[in-house]
Image (cartoon, rainbow, N blue to C red; front, top):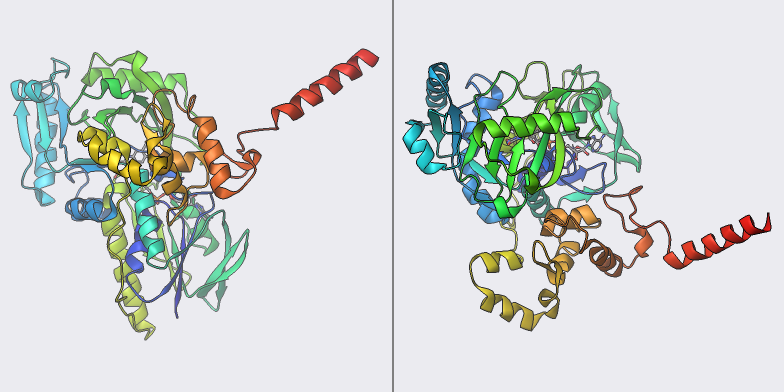
Length: 500
Ligand SMILES: Cc1cc2nc3c(=O)[nH]c(=O)nc-3n(C[C@H](O)[C@H](O)[C@H](O)COP(=O)(O)OP(=O)(O)OC[C@H]3O[C@@H](n4cnc5c(N)ncnc54)[C@H](O)[C@@H]3O)c2cc1C
């Protein structure tokens, strides 16, 4: 059977793995870190863009518009939180109004027929906390919010239940080829033979491409964010954009699918692809930018700050094409925003490219008869709480008492939900992996209360020493030594000092 190797388990690699798993082929998905959704797909604005921003003659413009309507069914099938709440691009003067009209025209060229420019009165009625100097807004009802890492994890779970082999902690260091034809990859875990390779390595996709002498250069562009406590969740009802610039959509204010408020990102070109630090200068810029839209941003409500890196090519467009130098390699490079919004259409495009390749190679592709379109729905306490269905939750607790013990008090996550995450098709094996699947430790106390409890559950379920439990994989272990051991060491040290 033909084997496809996909490099990178971000939203793009996992979406492609899932779509290809509809066919009778052997698929191996390689990820260098300890979990899926550990790259840019975990740190972005989480918007499914309506599709008015990019020009239709760009690949990103086309793929965004094609993908947007797909998300309702996709998220229902994969059990991913998704809300079509609509967006406003906010203008303050006549010049902005001209730009808004241009954006609307561009959106209409892209095929959107529901865009509307509204005036101040209507804007304030929809967003009572908006800056009262705002005069106009472009309304796009099709814009939506999603949890980007939950989408990626759900794609990966679905791919795995449909037969994809996911290898974590597996970093591709080189490509194997023979006579101009791809034959596999070299990794830190050894060689993996394959007939077709898909490079979806995000920020590092240029490095993989260069292994085939395809010349690309990604310049990372950092965006920083503040996340606010749910207490302030009703500050805005829609996604609020300022007027965009050529390089960025500006600093936005939006609700998240889980009821927090997110502000950011700024945009700074940097050199280091692993630099996810935040700076007070950058975050102040974010705060001031957000205040232009919502002047009463409650600074004291920030519960965490983070950054993400855009994988920008100088063309500022997506590059999705066969390698110029190696037969059987597809490079997917420069997938910055709206990459999350475009993931379904990118995966369809790559599947089509692979189908054409198979035809040329006289390889007959067959659809799987037993492809599982849907993920199973796992119980989450917060969902029952939000819907006022705690009697139904009680019935679940009566069947499985683990759901009755709340481990994360801020986000109301039970022991049962954490155990479900550890036993999922793509198992959660680190503290961060538990957080991204259950929300445990993502609330106001940021793991202060639940951290040690989650650590113990992980150790018990994975049958490992608590000292081995890590935040995000090898080298990030939480505990250094047993306290008894530390006390003994201290006694010895004091004794040595006394003897001298
Ligand atoms: C600040 C910011 C805001 C954004 N907001 C939005 C938004 O609101 N809406 C939207 O549509 N898009 C948005 N985006 C863009 C979106 O986040 C990206 O397009 C998308 O996440 C890219 O996914 P990916 O799978 O290509 O990359 P990644 O998620 O980075 O995945 C690539 C994976 O490859 C792995 N990898 C790398 N090298 C190797 C190797 N050698 N071997 C094995 N594995 C490897 C990495 O560890 C990583 O997990 C935003 C981006 C940023 C930075």
